[in-house]
Structure formats: structure tokens, C-alpha cells
Amino acid sequence: MKYEKFLFLLLVFLSLTVTACSNEPKVDVTPEVENKDMKIVVQKRIENQNDYENFREITQKVQVQKVKEIINGAVWETAEVEMAEPPHYKFRFRDLSPEEAGLYEVWISPKNDKLEIVSRNKGYTQLTKENSSLLFEILTGEKMSELR
Image (tube, rainbow, N blue to C red; front, side, top):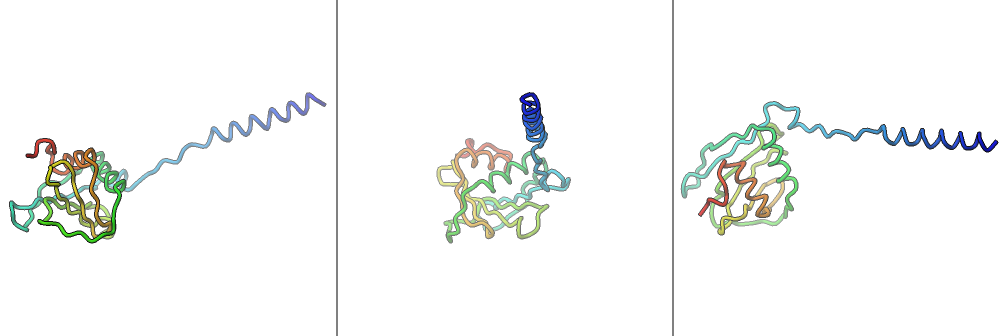
């Protein structure tokens, strides 16, 4: 009788262990992995005018994904902001719906160490120095530390 109880408990324990270990983590397949036409279109302000020219297209999936991570990880405020000058850069995700893509307007802080972003869909944010540097390098191909 003791042997049967022990065997029963052992089988229950093993079945629970196998069941728990066999659950594979879900893989988050996002559109940026599936979509081959994924890109970010960047515009740059023409000197001191309020006019913009197409500057770059970012098509590398890793870079586009990193920009999305920075944007989605930022702390956005819904406050109305008024900047002293037009944005230095503008960018949008080309593969998303207009509601998701939005237009992101980017200003470089006076100390050239942070980026401030305004989006009609998300609001206003000031990125950390680290994220600013990374985003600036992806958007422009230049290092933010070289600005002066």
C-alpha cells in the first residue's frame, strides 16, 4: 500500500514537472520582423528655415526595432509644448498605419546632449542622454557627441 502511494505521488510529481517544463515561452512576432518593407523616413531642417528635405531612410530591421523600443519606452507627457524653433529633424515609420506611425518632431537640446520629441499621438518627451545618443546616431548616422 505504501509502495502504491509512493508510486502515485511520484507519477503526479513527474507529470507536473514535465507539463511545466514543456511550456515554451511565447515568441513575440511583431510586424517589424515580418514586414520586409519596414523603414523610417527621416527629414532634416534646411538651415534656419522652416523647410525640410528628405535626409535618410533607415531600413535595417535592428535599427528600426531599436527606434521603436526607444519611442515606446519613453515617458510621454500630454502637455502642450511650445518650442523656440522648428524641429531639427522629423521622422515617421513607413510601414505602420497613420495612427501608429505619426510624425515625430525632434529637437536637439541646447547642450547637445539630449533629444526632445513631440508627437501628436503620444505627446512630449525628453530622452535620457543614452537613448538620445543612440537615437541620434540611428537617425542621422552621426555621433551626438561630435555636435558642438
